[in-house]
Length: 393
Image (tube, rainbow, N blue to C red):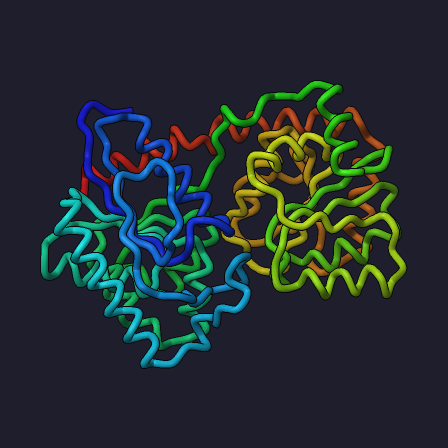
């Protein structure tokens, strides 16, 4: 990937597991470490072991706040719910931990993920110790700043200190400019998340598909999939409502705060073709994607760039998605998927049934999805772009 290695310190504000930004950070680190000359350390509120990093520095925060719901942090408060005193306490802990990490790890550059309290700490460290940093927004942090102005001024100042600012989609970039103005335009870069294509074969055998169906007790016939966090923003309730009209069995993979509500909805509506599978480890989930005849992402909020959609595309799935946030960066209507209206169960059912009735169209859409991933969403290409920014910073 490069000739000269660097020492890169990642600042992240959640445990690495459980969300799209966590996968983003995880696979970015993997690709940066492909060259043995690169050293990567990480600062985050997580005591668990993380593969592929050379040093871990734990911020002593027991229950980190969240922007939106996140598996594993169901009891955490949202950033908008914590007090000024708590914000100050967390800020101090991020500063202290990052200064310790800088003294020990001696990074060439810091890469901070999300424009929140940890970005403020990066600004402080640059001002006092001179370590340059780049900042990445995964979208949800921008929504938090828009809704809670307590985070605005310090976040804007942290962006002034950044050498470069990256956004995961064009939609997030537009929101950033609307929020902070045009003064940062020269620093802005759009770098989406991606997948490790090597983990996604172009196809799996019919034997393995039959074994997977048997293992998870999936019935015969077509399968429609959703994967992701079970939170209200993902719009899964509209897929459940559509289930009564969909001529297939629907598999919902994931966990989150809305799981019990969805279970109650399925029971109350007497729906028999929906399976709430719960959380599945990522390695196993990759193989499961290949069982999907249609993959549905019915988001009702401006989803910055869901990696689950990119993963479904890598497995050559045909897609039914809402035209929200960064999703159109990956999905083109009538090319590798179909758009549906937001909060519209009838439209979901109609589009899913149409694709189920068109096997050749699904095949072509799946092949196109795979090509889009190979051209735009591989971690090797993404990590190279970041490394170039690190060297410029």
